[in-house]
Image (tube, rainbow, N blue to C red; front, top):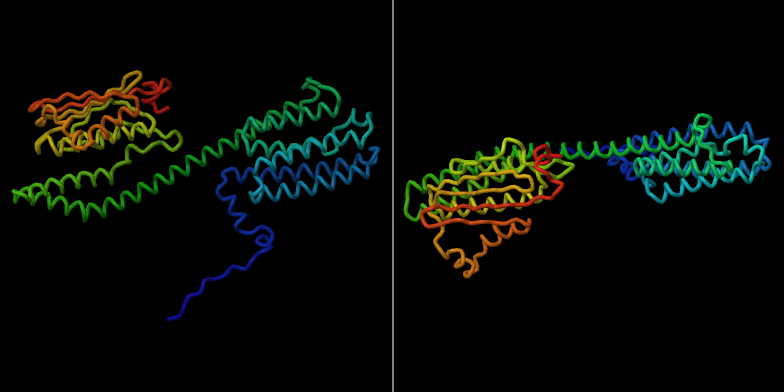
Length: 411
């Protein structure tokens, strides 16, 4: 048997210049294509600035100094472009340094040109080339940052000219810089939001597929074994009946575990859950659920605490209310709160039993039910009597901005 050896890919010039570990940083950046496109714009701006300086250099008072500054700015732009393409320099300090360098280069025109030339020409780096800093700021920080960079470049142009002109009909440079920064920033922000949503959707699909696979395997093995133990235990009776009840309880918990989240998955962006859909997952032969026709959407952490309290009530019903007890869940969505009622027709709770449980150190009800709802600033009412069943009523207030309409629409 021959040993297979991994095939080695020869290193390329790109690998030597930019290691693979650097290039891979761009893979997770949704704005990566826009960064690369901005460097093409930078190259176009450089070519335009080069042609401009060749044409006007002889008219300047210090042409040699202008070329020296041009070479320095060109070298800096090569570094900026490489860092932005690779991804390692997409940082605030780098964008700030680039912006400051372009602004200083624009103002340096006052050192190399005479007043008459300044009055009739743009700065030697050209506004087009300087706009590269505007694109970098917009891609990194969004619309407002891009607009701020455009304002800085526009104000620097005013300082260079020594005059503030608002006649955009003759010179719309300031307005174009402002709008361009906002437009590119909005595109970058939208790309990030779209990438976040797509990533969350893909992860949800992967989790759903894995849950479905595990569900099939568990159903074919563990669930059938638990169901058999439960059925045979009830048939045998005696002490085995207790084992049958435990097996039935674990079967129900396992079914809930592998199915939980299929309907009540929070939306990727807002982290919200439809409480009504999550409660309907609890429905079974012994649990009836009634919820509003519209979705009852709320923050996921709040919904999780409510669902955990409901699960504890249902567990107590199965363990203490009698084998034939039926549970009834009713959810009401009010303007500023949700009211959840969990009622059963079991044997009820004897007077003083809850106080006795607390005295014995059994804190299930006080912590798992009442404590959870009170942690949400809600209140719990319990009505029970021997032979009359038990009813829990939980009232949970919701934030003012979370109106009933927004909970139904999920917005």
